[in-house]
Amino acid sequence: MQKIKELLIKYREIIVYLVFGVLTTAVNYISLFVLQKLFDGGEYSFLILNVPAWLISVVFAFITNKLFVFESRSWKFSVASKEFLEFCGARVLSLAIEELILFIFVNLLFLPEWPVKIAASVFVVIFNYVASKLVIFKKGRE
Image (cartoon, rainbow, N blue to C red; front, side):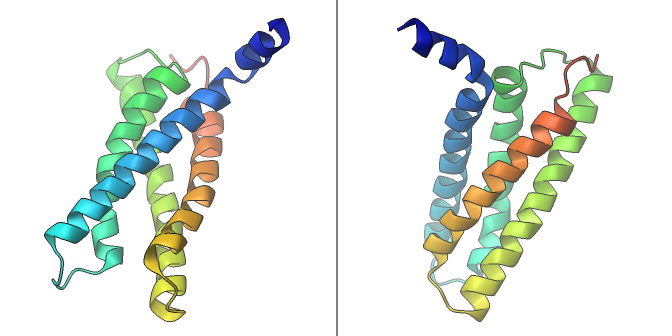
């Protein structure tokens, strides 16, 4: 039991990131699903509806990553604004990569939307963790 406790303490950040990563992904998928239902039969493609779903999930992810994963407690404007801009910048890059993956595999290769979206999400989660850990929520920022 002590060994398990030590492992949980050692890997706390990664475990918490994965929990909130799953929740962020759920927010993204649910938002996208709802948007698809709202605009069913409309002129909006999967790629277009993916963007507002992404925006909703980015706000959720920033707050949860800042507070619970990387424990960046400062809400001082200079700190929080820098973190938010860097966070959004990294997320814009990962959105561009995800959109490119969706475009290639869904629009050009005609693979089903949701399996491609799920596969792309794995890459996005890994990329976002590395960007957050090494750049955005660095320790000792204040």
